Image 1 (spheres, rainbow, N blue to C red):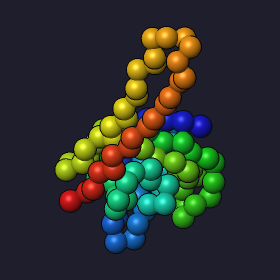
Image 2: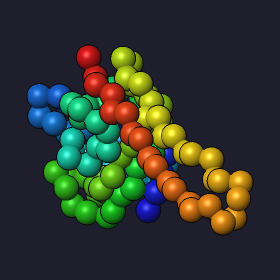
Image 3: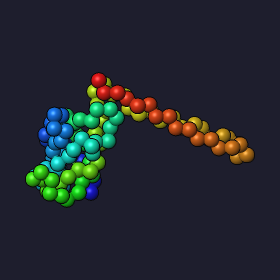
Length: 107
């Protein structure tokens, strides 16, 4: 299932935390390996996240996050830039597509 939640607890030292959401009463346990972000993977308490979860008995929580994405770029990060070329005006011209992703670094 997919939900919007707020980080209620996070421990950088232990690499896990809890996301609060109406769809996951009692909290949703999450591990840093579920975080979809570049560089050092960590969350901030109070941060909004989109997350996918499953029912599971994980460290006393009934739910476990399997994918977590922060709602906005974190402090010091630059959003990913995707360039899309224009399609040639002539139907006879060959089509070419490119993709450039610029990774960001967390300070």
